[in-house]
Image (cartoon, rainbow, N blue to C red; front, side, top):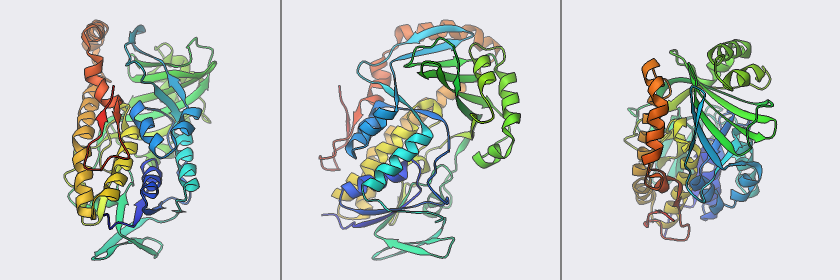
Length: 400
């Protein structure tokens, strides 16, 4: 029987609220501590939740809430130099296009409704581990104690450094992220997502409803800029660069021109986490982007964070002590998340092709699609399901 009764969850983005909600479902009293003054709404633009991520949200009762606010993606296409190629999709597996801000708010509100307390202005500065638990110390001079401490504090995780001061940090992909939802009369069927290789840079777009198009830009940028650094630059500056970069692309040029200062979402540097040697130490453990953050090319970042949150809760529910629970959690997750991160890293290299590669890409893409075994390449990722009621030492499976 588990001896874990209480948990401190550091971070209130996606992984934090889901972790705390899953822990409460597992009978563990969890409380979220967030460094910001309030809920982290207003960060980021659109993202696609994969079927496996939505299935994990079903376990904590949030799946239908997300489906109701999402736009299902029924058709996926690739565009190279204005030439479109429709890509095959797995049957019965729909991506769900959601606004990141709305997703954050929905997961926060769902956690609050489940009884999860949130505390704000709680920037973690240190921890003390002792035989009976772990005490977190915050910058405001307060502290909190529980049986375990869970780092859901994102790509720049403080908890990761406390677990292992030599832990690697995130790698910069060489691109900055931007996004917007714009009014446009471009003829795009709702439910279609297009991944476009423009003349100078990669972007993606899809209709969230007739006349309303979500688009996201991956802007090559040699200089690393954090979210706060990128947002400190006037939006007018970024709009000028985006309009110049995508000017010759269709429909990228129109999307950039229709984006305004008010609608532009600046997300700063796009990252990918290298493998993290230590996922846990003592009574502390990592979850979500703090330990595995594949680049946005994977389409799995948020979904993997949600899966890990649920799986961690199962392990703490079923295993007798934190050490055995954390070990089982890592065994169930490491190979999956690192495999997906490796796939995404390969895709990143294709986002900034040279002139020769750009010319041959349409032919290469058609050959790739023709011989692609979609079930083999994507089935295990998107059909992955967690059986909440099964003992935690039994691994989740991909289901048909």
